[in-house]
Length: 284
Ligand code: PDD
Image 1: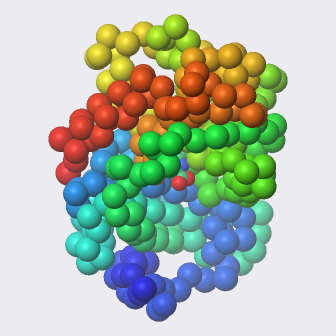
Image 2 (image 1 turned 45 degrees about the vertical axis):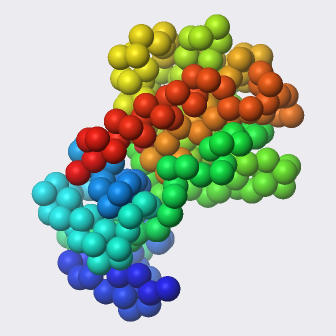
């Protein structure tokens, strides 16, 4: 496979793409990213991802490498050049290359990289029909999880801890309360009411989360945004996660405790359906 990727203004085969060894994304994880899904060759919630990117850049005093319209064109061009029907577009902006120094360089040019990942049939994955089994792990990440930085080592370790335990993913817990999954926002359902952690610096402000909560409320489902404990989660009727890469993913087991009958719950299944329908309709 030799995808066409985008690097600083050029579309090149992935084998020819280059970033400096002095790039601060590489040396300091001084970089932010976005992942946008593609269904039927169209982008899901591009505007939401572009808005969050601006926010992440702003929080780190990093200049935007290109404007939103250009960003949209690059996304579309990559979808076409790589023939993506269903899949993901990964975007990363770093502060750029400069001699190694902890202080931000004054005149670095930001690095902009985008690439695609084809995921045929991702809207109807076997994993989503089965539901995920998760373990809980302590959340030892930094205190600005609302900024979508590429510091993903701990989430990556969490995923491996889950795999070694024979599970699919990990939910992170701080002071007894669930923050989020390794790469998704976490929800539980109790007595038909949906609970998910309120927005703060503690979690990423998921773009899928915003859409799913809006759709749930429009469907007259009850939603409460508050912290919930891992014990509440284990006693829940059902649970699920949301992300651009897995949409709405039912969770059927937490730390070996089966939720309900151990199959995806009705609310998670319904929200997945509604979210996918709406996303296809509003994709650009
Ligand atoms: N991850 N929380 C964390 C820690 C995440 O990494 C993500 C997304 C989310 C969900 O955000 P959104 O709905 O905007 O995708 C929540 C992406 C998909 C990733 O790292 O691949």
